[in-house]
Length: 332
Image (cartoon, rainbow, N blue to C red; front, side):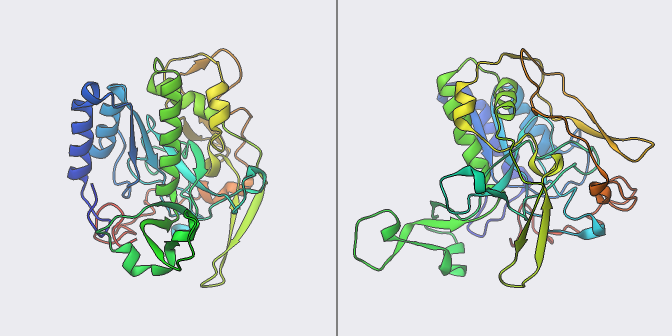
């Protein structure tokens, strides 16, 4: 749905989703990955992109969406909160944030990517992201016609990365990128594995199982340093940053918990005390809760409740999109 510059339109995304729905039975389409997004301009209830992903969900297709890469955005002094993009703001879909694997096989040292967008969503205050997955410095397929390899040759992948060769040459097939757009396909792959093992699962049951079994051991905070500017970014491991936790495919495949109802992402509610309570989804399971632990929105998240950020009358986007005039990801 995007061109060689990584740009596209709402209509192209909506048309592609519609075609996938039409071809669902012919090709047994069970999961759609959307590594795209744009700012939230209206409620998910009327947003055309959100309506399109909901139609796919209702047709029995799991929709996985990148959360966005604006966790470092500090418009209105909100420390990156309220930056989930559309259609990741829709409560039906599985919205994915990015983790850094730190170059090791062990998840114990993994940290949140400071750029990973945080909830709650603009306008509707939906709790997002739903889950996290590795998304930093990920090697994946290189588009032969894309401009990114020309703009960022340092992200090229040497042939020695995957071949036994003495040639000092850059691959024409693979490229390294970072972002929630790289994390979302990891979850889409997990969905495919889960549906292969349990084809009877509904989209809501898939979402609930992935969230319930997600890895939930995190530090309280972590700090990342931008190597180009020297600026530091501190991330808190709260509900609006990590969601239900870090994807654990093995645990999801091994889980036999039964779920009924809807797995809509809950809504954050502001009380008269200024603290947050969570409105729940109607999903019911026969054992532990989906999130697996009790969350309290503490004073450390005051930026979320500020009058001029998420809950106020003004959107953090203002009159202009932070992506500029371009649709979807624009220049980034």
